[in-house]
Image 1 (cartoon, rainbow, N blue to C red):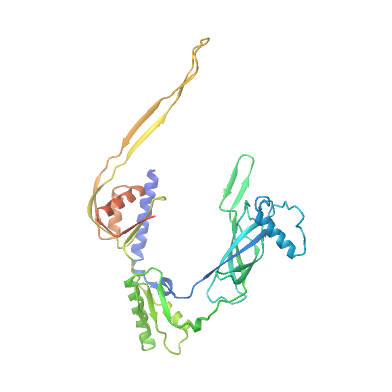
Image 2: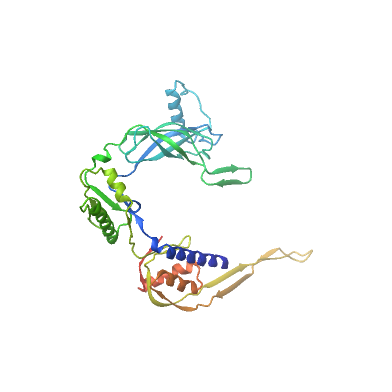
Length: 372
């Protein structure tokens, strides 16, 4: 446990050192912090069959939909199996999902994710049979087919089972071909609006100022207006295509501003502290109380040739340990001084989480505390 505490403090110190070293180079491109409104991916979904499995597919007796799908596929191929009994374990019913990029042309390919729907134990070695993929409007936009790639595996023995990863989920690189294009073209877009991925009033103003400074020099006019803390409206100069205009302003750099925030994950003990987090000077003490209960049952046997019975006598040992709670003064105007103050107390991640929550309740944490 001591090694974990040292490792956690070393990791925090390394993150602070990297942040300090990169502080002067925290400029970000506009294309990395904002996206154009209306230019987005569209989700596709389909239902199909994976064949060629080595006895790891669905049991048709339990997965009725797999048997019905297999019969329908064979009927379309001219093979009648309606009056027969299927007992194959080489077929699995799957759900296929993919993201259709904006302005994807007909004939281009996208990656697909294949997930088992029945009681198959593994999709390794299988091949997805041609499957239409539709959007939310019910229109087919792509067709998927190909050999699946599984990263996990499962080995079953008589007394032990070893599983690594998820063998019932797989991917097919470039497994779907686009058959229908989405309506609309990028050149026909009217109003152009940039939406910030992390909304902030100051960041929106910085983006608008950077774009206006560039277009004022190049085109002699201001083209950006901050509408709110989330979006910036663009007025594209005449005789400049939208693609070229976005390429030019996308490489402009700004200094994004983020609110002071502390994010803690109580399950994993992860603590992430933002650069602008400040703590008013407070005195903190933290001590742990450990109660250890040990059961050591003993067997009491009667003497030879006696009429007694063998009984189990319980013996309980209770130990109480309380670590000393040293009081320390924590406070600082920078992330480095804050982390130094927490490290001086020799706390583990769970202790840091408890202290941060207590400081927030006391009103001394000048930041948003997000507990996941």
